[in-house]
Structures are given as structure tokens and as C-alpha cells.
Length: 110
Image (tube, rainbow, N blue to C red; front, side, top):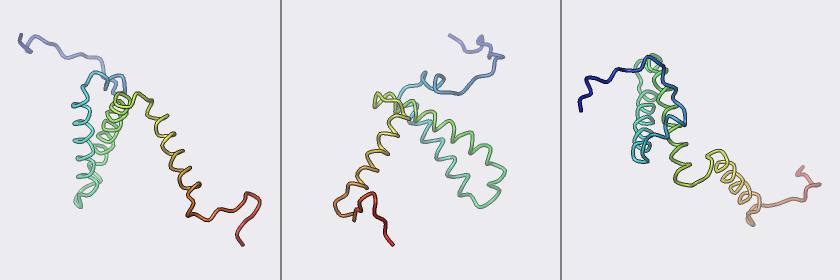
């Protein structure tokens, strides 16, 4: 089978979570890693970083979408719901930590 007969689509490709679903977990992990690696390179490059900021935004968005799909696959949870649950757990640990001085709701420190 030759790729020479395949005509590129004239329709624009929408890069969203549905688009990322077509990739395997390995491919998603690679996309996220290579994207964040490029963003890091652009952001910490001392020469002409302003010229490449659009590339950094683009790669950052691709990496975030790849990670959202990967997280959904690996955890079985919606990434936003997972983030909320993790943040809630972290907040509970901070507030309920026995080493942290707690005041009743009606008292304030002066």
C-alpha cells in the first residue's frame, strides 16, 4: 500500500480531546513529553523567546489535551473531577492537620 495515492484533506483539523482519542497511551505520553520539553526550551531560552511564544502556546495546548485524555484513560475519571477531588483532599489534609493550630469559626487572631 502506497501513501502516494492518499490526498490530504482540505478540511481543517480540530485539535481537541476527541482528536487525541485516536492515539495510544504511549503516543499520548510522548506528545505530552515532547510538547512540554519544547515549551521549556522556548521559555528558558535567553535569545529570541518572544518570537517562539506562539509555538510554546501551541505545544502547551497539545500537551495538555494529550494529558487530559491519558488521565481519563488511566484513572477512569474526568480530569476536572479528578483535579477537584485531589484539591479537596489536599485542603482537608491541610485544614484537619493536627499539627496546625485551629480556631473555632467565631474566633479570629488579633
